[in-house]
Structures are given as structure tokens and as C-alpha cells.
Image 1 (cartoon, protein in one colour):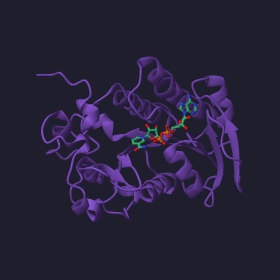
Image 2 (spheres, helix red, strand yellow; image 1 turned 45 degrees about the horizontal axis):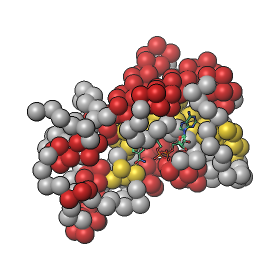
Image 3 (cartoon, protein in one colour; image 1 turned 135 degrees about the vertical axis):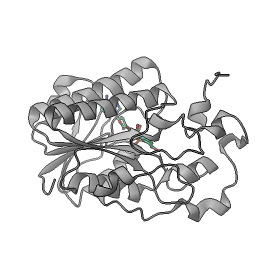
Image 4 (cartoon, protein in one colour; image 1 turned 135 degrees about the horizontal axis):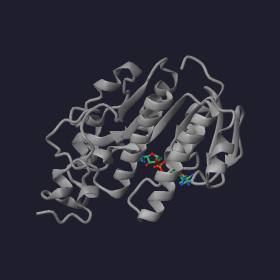
Length: 265
Ligand SMILES: NC(=O)c1ccc[n+]([C@@H]2O[C@H](COP(=O)([O-])OP(=O)(O)OC[C@H]3O[C@@H](n4cnc5c(N)ncnc54)[C@H](O)[C@@H]3O)[C@@H](O)[C@H]2O)c1
């Protein structure tokens, strides 16, 4: 999209949402929303409280916006009931309401956990079949499928960002491969909004580094170049989370997420 009026940011009270709010606010007119209450709006911003699992509320918060950055959801493993409401139904509601309102682009906060059961030795790109490591990861596969459906059937463009580990800095060996700085993630979201044509793009949200697992060539048209590099921290980090040296937490890209409840033999 070369220009737009108002962008809706969902999940604006969350860890990533708070940073995106700061990054996007000076650049565009922003409508920030969350099921939780938000800090008072700043210049160029309006805030609305909304449970996106309610389709009527989703339609109301989406009315009048030109693009959506959809970060709301449960960002970890949870019960099927919680995942179904926050990640399946809410995400469908966002796409359906966007289509009904004529919104032409959605940036969707997906996750690396859609490919968490690939071995760490394997480089994975956007065309790899999903291998989710959790019910949470499976719910983001659903979100990516909904994004593709709304592009193929209705022409609603999307960029699904498979976010790595969004943190101030990596703190264990796995995160040397998965880390994304907040400023790199914000820049990728921005590129996802302003690139003229994106179709249905899948991008990996990851900073630079020689130990990364993900090939982002299918998202090259976004023109995203990471400014931060996980290698900066590599010498000070020598341990996996939990100190494990073998087993599924080390063998699979999803790390502890893949290992949790793992009993395949
Ligand atoms: N933080 C990471 O490293 C990471 C990694 C991969 C993917 N992601 C994805 O990025 C997004 C943001 O992650 P985060 O770490 O900021 O999570 P977060 O939990 O801090 O923020 C998510 C926000 O969504 C809101 N929300 C949940 N259900 C809602 C509903 N029904 N209606 C409206 N709002 C609702 C929550 O109140 C919360 O403020 C999530 O979709 C997550 O799956 C995050």
C-alpha cells in the first residue's frame, strides 16, 4: 500500500503491541485496541477496548480503518478453549470484518512455532509444510490459512510474520537462532504496511545472525534489512534454557515448546 489513513493495531496492550504503538504512532494515524484497558491515547492515536472473539465488537473496531496489524492473541500454549477463542475465532473475526469493511491489508502476528518440529540442522523457508510444536503453533497455522483464503478468495492482502523470540536480547542458545529485536520487528511490520504489493506473503520475523534457521527469500520484496545481529551476544551465551544438551528441546527448532509433553519414540 503506498498510502493509507488509519491503521488498527490489535493486542496494543501486549509486549509487542506496546512497542509497535510507540513505533507506529509518529508515522501514521493509529487506532490501538486490546481486550485490556490501554494507556491514554497520544497525539494521532485513538484507543478502543474490544474483545475480538465477539464478531460484532470486531466489526465495530475495524470500521473506518485502512489496514490492520493483528497482534492480539494468546502467545503461548493454553487450553483448546482459550486458544479457540483468542487465536482461532478472533483471528477469523478480524479477517471477516476487514473484508466486509473493504480493508485491503492485514499484517498478522504468526509465530516460528508453526515450524517448531523441524530439526535445527534444517533451513526452513516460507514454502515448508507446517510442523507446529504446540496447539498454539497449530492455531497460527490456522491464522496463516485464513490469511491465504482471504487473499485467494477476496483479494485481501496479508503479511504473516512468523515472529521468532521478541526480546531485548537473546538469553539462551536457542534464542541466538530465533531472536528478533523489537526495532527489527517494528521495521518489518512497517515494511509490511508500506510495500506497494504484498499478495499473501509469509515472512520470518528474525534479526540477523550466522546461526539463524530461517530463509526469508520469499519476503525479499518487503525490503526488510535487520539492523540487529544475534551474533553480538553469542560469546556470552553458552547454555540452552534448562541447561539441556540432548533431547527434543535441543533437536527441534521449537526448543522447549517442542519438548513440552513430548513422548514420541
Ligand atoms: N513475544 C514473542 O516473542 C512472540 C513470538 C511469536 C509470536 N508472537 C505473537 O505476537 C503477538 C503478540 O505477542 P505478545 O508477546 O505481545 O503477547 P501479549 O500476550 O503480551 O499480547 C497479546 C495481547 O492480545 C490481547 N488479547 C488476547 N485475546 C484478545 C481478544 N480476544 N481480544 C482482544 N485482545 C486480545 C491481550 O490482552 C494482550 O494484550 C501474539 O499474537 C503472539 O502469538 C509473539
